Image: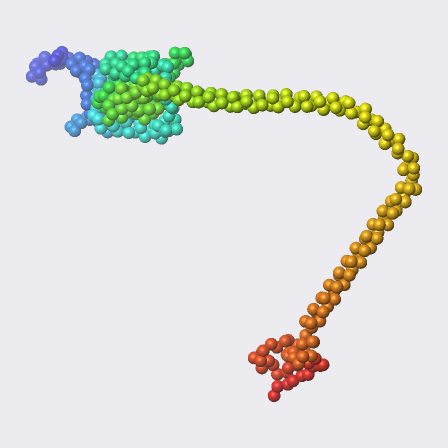
Length: 450
């Protein structure tokens, strides 16, 4: 460690060198920066303030001490997660001093999350935010094509992941694979993955893949963090090409798994989701071909039988027509031969038709005779109708006379009514009246009860 110049013990009789305040501040700054230089410090953020200029100021603390930190705008804009009080981070920067307040501080150049707990808290907040925007809803999921002609793969060019995917695709259904190599962890990984998604979508239709597989092997939360970055999630959501995510192992979940159109537990499973088994397709096609061939043969045989039946029917009709054609011709000849005779016969009838048959007087006399006969028939019919109605009337009168109650009274019966004229049909009802009117066949008397 370098000792500052011109510092003497108090018992020395020599004169001390005189410094200005600024000179002292500069010497302190030089001592700090030359002896400590760049350091990486782990602690908890407190007192965070973001100035209107875009610079950030906060304290980094642990259980015993506090270190002031300044994060300039350029460095602050590169941070991929929101800063807040209580967040545990690892800060890389340069120890320097702030002459304005005579204190040392850390000039921050890089901030990383420290500890899984802090990262999971940020992940939860980011997931809630994107879920609220609807990026994970099932309605936005696109269907995977059954047999893609081209498959795009976004992953690291090194490692077992890309080999497993290509090997599995070749085993199941050899398909053209386009690889877009990216870093799958580290500071630039998220930007490279987002750029790859946009790049595949921007290709010409002839070269554009039908499916994109985004894959990475397993790892810690920190290793998989690039696939939780908001820029990657939003680019995946905006992709017009269906995306299969295969990040980490089956138990690992990242935000790209939630926004992808299909989530595969492993890269190998992603290849299985992307393409069908060619041998199964061939077997199915052969089965369909055999069924179609057999069905077509059956249909042709059926139609052949129908045609044979039609042929027999057609031959029958041809024979029938031929057999009747001669008869028709003979009838034609007979008609031609008989036509002159018919004309002679009708001519004779016309000749016998005299002018007397057209005399109006004879026609009127004939019609008058017919009319007279019709009148006589109607008169006789009317007389019969009158006689029938008269007989019915006599019968109805006799029946009505037999039902007349006066005839019943003549046989010794009477009718009892109350003083108001109501009919009394029983002794009980009659006992309720003081005056009774009793009608006989020859008159009516009043009877008063005592």
